[in-house]
Amino acid sequence: MSKLFFDVFPDLKVPSETERLLKEVEVTKVSTNPQRNHLRVYLLSSRLIEKQQIFRLEQDIKKQLFPDQALSIKIIEKFHLSSQYNPKKLMMVYYDSVLEEFRHYSFLEYSILKRASMEFPEEEKLTLALEDSVVAREKSEEMVQILEKIICERCGLNVDIRLHYTESKEKKHKKKNLIVEAVVCHSVHHSIPLLFTLQCLQMLIAMTGWSGT
Image (cartoon, rainbow, N blue to C red; front, side, top):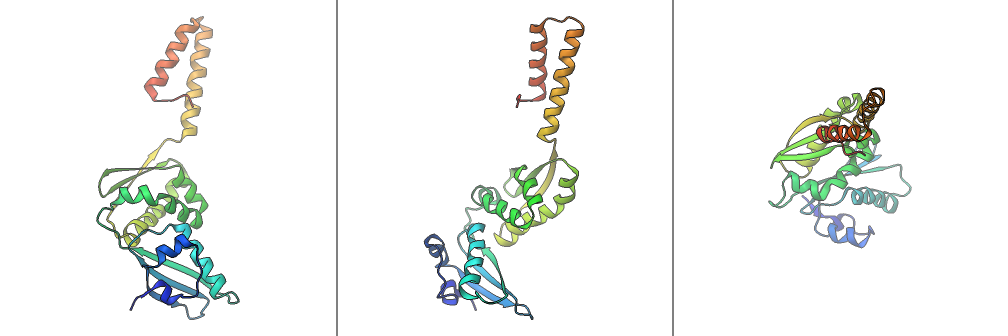
């Protein structure tokens, strides 16, 4: 049987903003392992709670309620969101929390996701575009699984995630520099006027979509 958060943790002191959020949050389950050194607290909320607040809450529970015990605290939150939410709307308001969770889990995967882009061609379809690299391809499946757990299991939404790989900005920049050097060298060697050379470079940049940065 679920109970309100502050019925379970009546003596816990938290920041006022977090306190307002937690007043209507339910604790659906509290469990521990056989060694009693790991405590899991399951929450159900009708409103999104930022991941940074969840991490802070874990720390507050440990410091205030179990200060002298070798006990780790893990909060597993679930959200029962209104019908206004879909994956796109969720990412608009919850993306920073997703990044924070990846950073907490793996800085490498966090770095890959931070450089990625997300597009929603349909309401329940997400295209995740990663900068192509060996590491990104190795980590992509796990990253998709984490995103599915966040969007589907935690937030109760349906989503179909498709991967797409794009050329990295560094590679694009190197290619651009090579083309510029080749055009300039060709122009100098064949005594092509500078104005015509610049016009050629502008056409190449426009055709390839390079911005010059």
